[in-house]
Length: 115
Length: 113
Image (cartoon, rainbow over all chains, first blue to last red; front, top):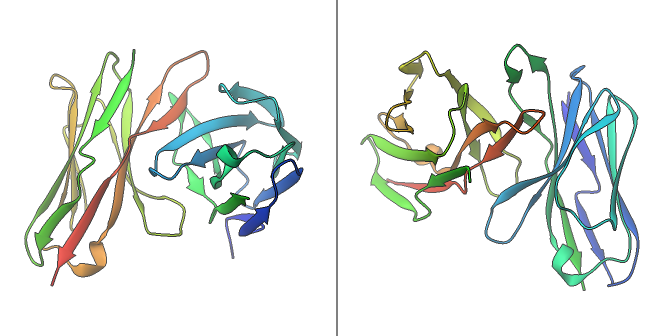
């Protein structure tokens, strides 16, 4: 049973297009995240939702819009794709514990290539 | 500003030796620190969490230390095996209204048979 799943695994598209990545977790966690991992392998947080509410919104272009229809799903929609958006996007989830968030569980990643 | 540093150079060691990876942080005092493993083409996988009041944590061949005075964590793999080859990331919570976990850049470990 996959704990955190993402679709698609690979996404190749032209500049200027709009695309979406979907994420689902079956762990019953309250918090979900989107991370971007660039070519230098640096993993940077983009957004976080807690019980469907946006709680972390890092400096990300407003072409990126997350949406959480329920606490088990967090989707990422990207408008007007640019070359610099090419990266691997990871979804993750965690459960809030006393003192902060607990272990993060990551999905397999979506490799986005913008041509 | 708050910063997390891991040795960005790859670490190559012989099979059977102990691998030691370093995570340094500056300008804050995290309540805990985590270590993750990432294999090529996959998402990071949690390995160990150590809290600020713990000096050391072990799990099978893994050992993590946390020195809040030096602001450093060491991650050890004893009796290393080629299957331990991966990138290892440390992660710390950074306060900012709502705690979030921020990852270091990772250190790539290569265990040579």
